[in-house]
Length: 338
Image (tube, rainbow, N blue to C red; front, side, top):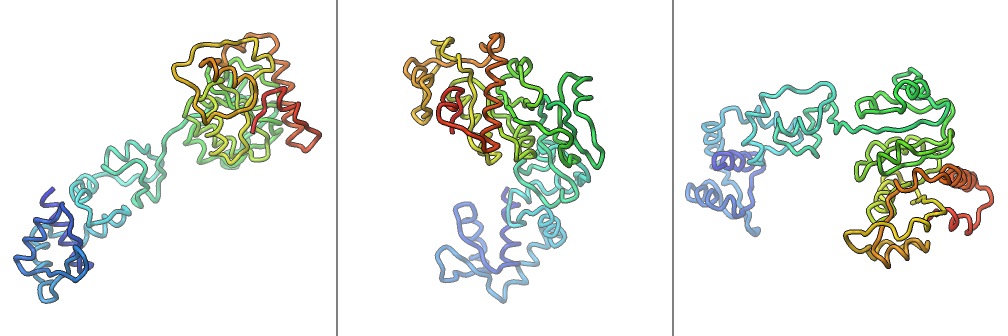
């Protein structure tokens, strides 16, 4: 790193005329001062180039890094700073990697370049870095999707594969949903519950596992006018998933659990206490917080009352979205919370 620090500091001095003294470059600053290349600027911890010594600095940088001018341009094309010693250190790796021209997995890019997967370098301006999320869902009856101008029946896909799966790389070709749009959107936390969910034919059910909600959020965001609610475990984690989806999609926080939920008390022991921030008014939350229990959504799936209860919730939820009559007893009855 010492050579990289020399190169980065010399480059900064030549191009900007000054450098800040920090612990990392203090010995280097002392060397440059002894050589009389730099002097204090009058500002705290700042050194400036002696005008008559700029040529000496350029000569020194040319000796240890002959291609510095071209390499500075290359580094800036990555939207990175040539004054960063860490970038200088991995420059040979960066220069010998192919510039992707299509879709490239973000972690592959990070491993190959040493650049954080969260960074979006200009080098991939002709490409897109992907996380390659996958989202599984059951479309509502008659729903279609348009990809690159071509309309595809989601009913046909579901008939073939029992459900639909969208990949992030497909999403770049996705334009819109068409056909008969869903009347309501349901995100479901657990796989078993999602698979066996007795959703009405006009509902779109979306698998949103744990914290992996990117794909589900994309689908919800593409249907902004369709009402949504979340069905998951009745515990702090399940509530947090619903809140995160609501935040990601700029929607009102909505939860569903069956009206017969109290039949499943006391539930299973929770490994930690309910957090005080989980403040929901239904008596089921008061009881679970008091006993330290939780209820997994899977326990409801074989209850013969669930299809009708879910249907009733969906109907009332859609009526509310349409601006029809709605009162407090409706929300209390079916577990709808804001």
